[in-house]
Image (cartoon, rainbow, N blue to C red):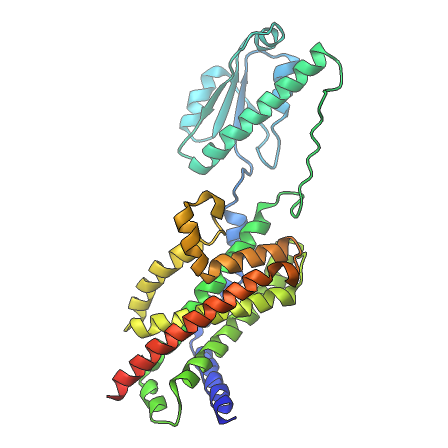
Length: 375
């Protein structure tokens, strides 16, 4: 019972210490509010109001049909320009795409020839250029095929594709980006807060005060784990309701309490990682450098930014030892697809097992560091 009291009192001390670190508190507040909103809205995976111009040298119903197929929000309303204006407009950066429909295009299409449409792309706008070229090709070919089908056969096509998009019917990329940013910030903040708490104790000299008290290393470590995990967990729940569901308008399909249980297990693993890094680093700058080495693989290879199916098998298998891999899978299943505990229990079990291993390793390292201080 006395151990629980010690852990509780030490945890409250950590919370009071964090409250005095106003800059760190401001960072936590930004990470779970503005950072999530700007990541969701500021870097979409698809086009948004891409500037497009059309040089229509054919001026037929087919060329007009193709031109009218480009509209907001994917593209800005197409600007109709002459051929001599094309190079100047692209040089000035007014247009990312310029579509040139040659004379006699409709006539050649109906005659069974293969006329070419020239698409000029400003490749300095790399993200728009890569995605937009495929969009424009697909839209133009779709309009030509539909026009040909109606002009030649006047019949119903033999196969009709009925597409149903599940879990995100409007294919709103901000929903995905917002949740993935939240997952990344949960991992980042939990490691930073616990690692910084340990280094702060060493820099202020209070760790030596704790060592002369009748406290065991596991009590000191558990106090840092539960207090910093609680801060991140509360911030996560608030961000989920206020930012993700409120500001971004994402409907949450599954159980939020179940998601928070998974988040708590994930925090058990990541706060242990933070303590381990806090024993390795001797100062905050060193902790920052270690964070770069640890966070980049955890965030990029967990399946949140790149599907695990696209990774080499050896990388995908190695990342099964990281808690973020299972946490991302669990979060997507619960928040997007409404999965219950009967579906996500393997991820919960994997995170708990990995967290236990990380906690044991951090405790071993922390005990060794404490022994060196006492000698």
